[in-house]
Image (tube, rainbow, N blue to C red; front, side):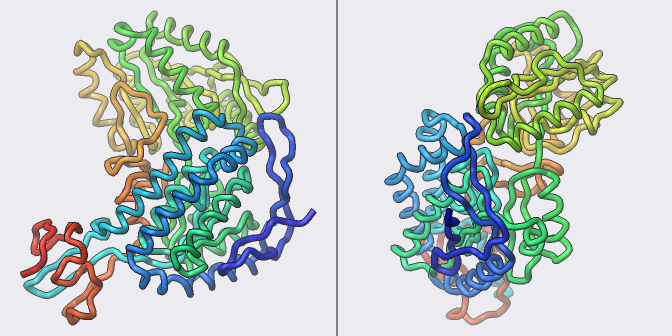
Length: 526
């Protein structure tokens, strides 16, 4: 069987392959048609050369062209919706409706259009002008961006259509997409539409390129290459940290989303007020999408007592009643089993589940574990192992004081939250605990499960290490997400006609917000 071609330098061409792989249907375990190449360094090298040559041309194309491309790409995705949904369903096991067709694909096209609007309006670049000394600065494209997409969002975080892709393109950079091995066919279809949109809008052909897989050594080499501007990566902590070490050694920016257990603290008053409702809400959130969300609430902290035991019993019943849905791949199933074993070896007690389902495809029993506060504090690092999938750990502490001590041992997370009594009985305890949790999470929630990430300008999808590689950046939320893929450029006494449009005295569009002599304004200078 011939291998699918890679997209390099404006051509679909045969890869310099060192091997090949095929995707699987995780719901059945069957191997899917189509074979994809594992590229040698020659492909990476060629893609980098083409992207480096395209970068100045892409910058010269201007924001209107970037916006036109992103908008046209969204339209082309919508026109091919049925085929994309079928392919993503086959490769991921995720439901065609509502998940793929009605939620994730519209989110993806919505992100593309938001990126187009941000590129066109321009305020994301934070243009800053000091007229007294004639110094001006803004954020500008930094060059080729590698995007490594995750396995759990075949559209919205896809390496050739998702959030990192949108941010990099809207900021003016060419993208080299490294497909996720769980959905190469979906990525190929999206790349076809992206490349067609590149041609229709007259952007450089190497604006978008696609490689399906590389060896680990080449992955570390490409993030550190002098031609690379930056890398966006979402995936496992172990692989991400190896890439980070290579990029850091070369002084190259790399933005990582790695792992998160997303602690939820359910305070005593909340349990007394609405424990049964919270059990239903937690079970629904924990098992949604087989728990394969980076914001899945997989660590729950409760104070010992009868209400807590009733809550745990109610969750156990719901976990045992719900049929396990497919995991994304055999690799995810193996990793989940290994994580559950790690938690048990660290002292966690099995409440229910804990083993694979004996059925076609890749399924794992809905799994609930528990430890005491003392047991957690004896092995906090191992008991914060991310069990990516339909598993959760309950930590039952002695009292509020031990809950506070536990928070001091938490690693960085994408999210964390509290459930408290709406009548106010938990307010004093909340005031004591919130300052301990707040610096350990990127997004703080109240009375809401963290599953799901709204595509809002105010959203922060990031957090302290090890949830990400840097706590100051977000992977979701335009315009902030664009700023990861930009460099700050300063112009000192540069002649007016030589300045970028955003820094000239006259605003390029009348909409861009610029900081002029300490005041944010949309006006022209003078």
